[in-house]
Amino acid sequence: MRGLMFVLTVVSVIGLAFWAYRENYTTQTALDDAQKLQIQIGEARDRLAILKAEWAYLNRPDRLRDLADLNFERLQLLPLRPDQFGRIEQVSYPPVENLVIDGIVEVSNQEGL
Image 1: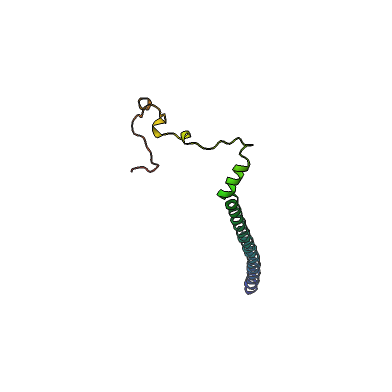
Image 2: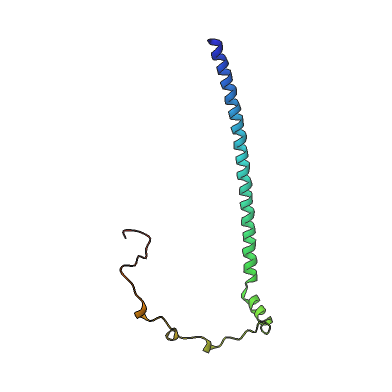
């Protein structure tokens, strides 16, 4: 009986050592993957910052004004005139009598308010 307990204890210790060894490598792999993802996130943030800076540089008002001046004829652009702008009274809205609201209209996604 004593020998059987000794063998079971040794087998249990070996099994637990194997499990701990495997879990250690699984954990190390997961930590390496997480570190690689953090590096990729940092690189993506750097690329995004560069793209934002390039976008701001390309959208400078003086540059856009120069491009519009250079391509004025080719794009057949017309200068803005004051008579191209309207007044609010000139906007045609649909007639109110055609607007039918039956009952209560729920405008919130929260119930009971």
